[in-house]
Amino acid sequence: MSVIYLDNNSTTRVAPEVVDAMEPYWREQFGNPSSLHLLGQAARHAIEVAREHVAALIGATPREIIFTSGGTEADNLAILGTLAAHPTKRRVVTTAVEHPAVHSLCERLATQGYRVTFVGVDQIGRLNLDEFAASLTDDTAIASVMYANNETGVLFPIQDIATICNARGIPLHVDAVQAAGKLPMDVKSLGAKLLSLSAHKIHAPKGAGALFVGRGARLRSRQVGGHQERDIRPGTENVAAIVGFGEAARLAKQRLASDGMASVAMMRDRLERGLCDRVAFAYVLGDQSHRTPNTTSIGFEALEAEAILVALSERGVCASSGSACSSGSLEPSHVLKAMGVPQPLAHGAIRFSLSVETTDEEIDDALRIVPEVVHRLASLTAKRDYAARP
Ligand code: PLP
Image (tube, rainbow, N blue to C red; front, side, top):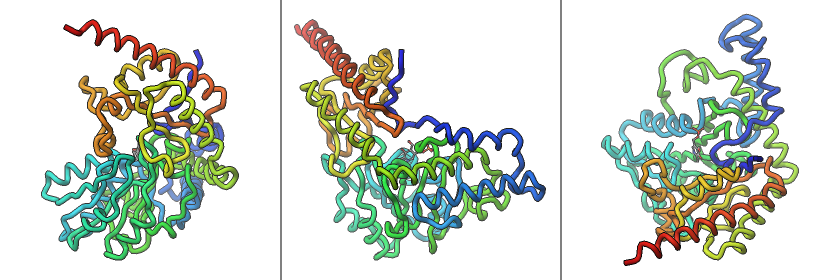
């Protein structure tokens, strides 16, 4: 059975060029980048080349890039590091739809005496900018707002948000994990002080990420150790993964300069339209005019996402849901809840996320398989409901 991988917001396949770039750093070039000998210096040089590529992807200077173990660590470092550097300021402003790397951290901070404001969104996931501006107070240490939502792909207007924050002198952290490589990005014109990236979302391996730390950002390290990454993130670097991250960033920038992910957006749109045409109870969730090119979230009314995912997987289609299936009770995600998506749609919400590796043939197959699966499940549900009637 061939696999149709439509779960690229979860992770991406490592590109062959990236595997090739990493290979020497697991084999002959195994030195510690802090060592002064030739093997150490070869590793150091490779990290600095990767830093240049990652910086170039977002319009930063190499010095502004701090490598981490991934997006979660970058998010945690940005928020906790800023709070530690501003001990008298006890408020964090964020949104109701952040990834758990920010959302759960902010929930924990709220139990530790910090005042946390979760600014709401409307039915299609747009941030209320007036509410956001009004929630910034003199005791706000940091605002943390994602660029692209991992579940719906909806984009927040980061430039406008940064203008609001900068006018108040409040550092803005942007979780750009789902936006980097999918949209052209220039941190200088965005105006954010801190910005998180993750390697495994752009066809590099898991275990590497980066935090952009712009000029004027005040940050205390979370870990204590050696002097790596300008003392901001001590610990021996994951050299091969960082080299892979650099190569993936170089490839992503090249791609953005050529077709800007337009072919991915065309496939996503064809999948989305095709599913809504073929399935009467399918609805697109989220703002369709401001989205990443690769993501669609579709609610299949009155079905359960977990059942759809299992049935799709049996047919070789890998997708994802916005529900916390693991608990047994299918709770819709905090993102769909914050959007006020009606329960029967939120319970059956499936995220399809494409990549540059997705093919037209895979979309053709998905357009055949997904409607078959959801129609079969709908007929089973109807029979079950009928049998359950008194
Ligand atoms: N932020 C967003 C928006 C994400 O989608 C993810 C991963 O899904 C993360 C942060 C966490 O990144 P990582 O898996 O590299 O820790």
